[in-house]
Length: 468
Image (tube, rainbow, N blue to C red; front, side, top):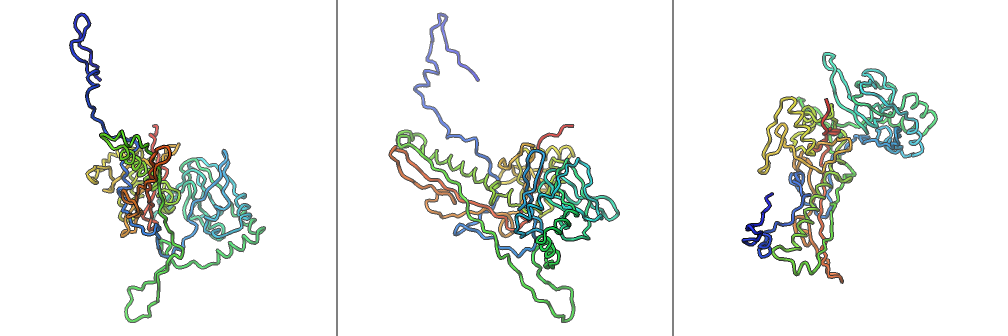
């Protein structure tokens, strides 16, 4: 910064007018009010927006028989963890069991185990003898290849469960070997304890027996009710009849909203409007803040936010903490026609470091005139609304978008009264006795995942640099 020294004669007197004094007679060129909180909002720009008449969007799907694919939650007090009794109904064998007292009794019989990394929890082919509830940590599911080699077939993390067939099938065996990757805390219910519970609690024994004896409904690999198709036949065989069954209780998404009341004093609106309209500038920045909240809600809202609406079968975990090309390939392979990745900028940087370590330099792609990082030709858009935890972990989202592709869509309603921008209106509320003008600014929005595999998440993504 250059500081102008006043022009002076030898006796200290000025020879000309200073710029500081001249500034009082000159006009200044002013910028519009700036706002640091404005982001690129790539998610909002990338989602196809569907018009929702009546404010409610219903997602009709085929009937699905898959049950108990939820996440188990716990109460953690210091080093001790307890499963919430009603959360046991996330296990398929206890789905629909209504007696909370019995569930509390079962929950109280789980034993906590804290295991170091590298511990074999269950071994392939051995009798399944315990129900495992993962409280914290990561475990690898190890299988065997065609020639007996060890292969990694998946990961388990906090909230997952395994071995639930112990409750109903006395002859069940472990389908894979389970081994801890990190220090892990889990709750365990042994087969002997299950036997004691069923012996002492007839209602529980009756329920588990009914579940064990119920025939499995015919379904495809996605859990949908089967559609009978004949093929490869010759002659005139009798063809079986079929029909497509629908979910009798489809999910409905009601448009959510963000609102604010903008207040401007009449004196400000009357006297201080040159060269910029004060109400217009106040409204512009209020709308920007509403759009930022909309993007935050699309990611984090507990009802319709993408982080909370991903099917658990579409959630995977990083193998080593940092997001590697292998992790991104696994996430990409879980759906067809992935249109975009969405990640916190720190996660993108962590992925870039992993690529550099392997000597990989993925080519960026151009989207709307911007060059953005990509993997396998799929753009990786930054989104600062995805949270980063205190342990420096976050998530990376991958999604297919659009109604025609049975993807993820944004929901809004255009043509609303006093519409200022699509699905956003500004309504004059009046002037109060203190001469303050009020405007109600409302924005209506939501998002829907049309089929489960439209959205996938890579969890436990470590963004901190790992020390050598």
